[in-house]
Length: 258
Ligand SMILES: Nc1ncnc2c1ncn2[C@@H]1O[C@H](COP(=O)(O)OP(=O)(O)OP(=O)(O)O)[C@@H](O)[C@H]1O
Ligand SMILES: [Mg+2]
Image (cartoon, rainbow, N blue to C red; front, side):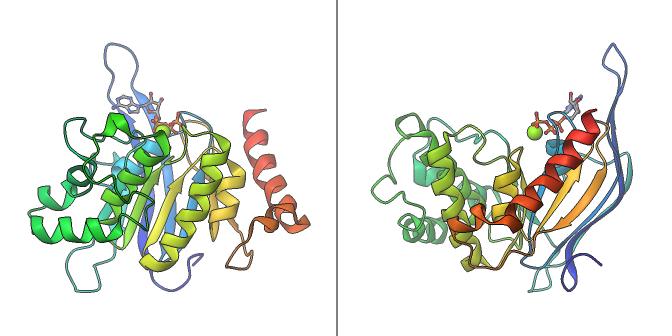
């Protein structure tokens, strides 16, 4: 088993075909098998359109796979396992304040609204959002919106976080800062992360393992253990070990487009 200990998430032979809508049906995923261990940080990289978002949507239960099985371990309190999902677009509701957006998931799930607000308030400094509880989304920067969406995801208190390109639309500097920040948060959270990105350096820097997908129909072509020691410093990116891992990822991605 690739993942350390019992996996919290296991996909076995998952395929997804979207039915024809006037034209041909689209086979998005073909026989994807993967695992994520407890508290493991796993990235998923692959070309645009290979089915990464489709895969997260299936794990989040938004859609049904055409074939295969998705198993999510029960939570530590014995309740059925559930995931916290941050979609590719941040989807903050424009008429709700930052704090009301952050607590949306907890409210929809029937949780205690007052408790959720209190907890969100207490987490604002850690998310770099102190003083912005009442701000509306359009008055926030792109990085702040992403952090607010992440806060909402974290507040769901799940053992598995599915993050779909959370830093995709940000400039390199903001992105680098948020990567460091995410690692700090993750180390405190005790959650497993399945992280989708196009950026191989981002994937390596953050992850314990990286799965590389093929072009559509997406399947897993490489499961690469990263093995760089933690806590990771920026300097790791300049090491030969990092360069060698990056080359392996790029080779896999490029071989597939040849
Ligand atoms: N609801 C849908 N109905 C029909 N086809 C869909 C639907 N959602 C996705 N697809 C198709 O499935 C394929 C995979 O899409 P998906 O969004 O999962 O790719 P992706 O790997 O996340 O791409 P990107 O890196 O650009 O975000 C694409 O060909 C897309 O057109
Ligand atoms: Mg996507």
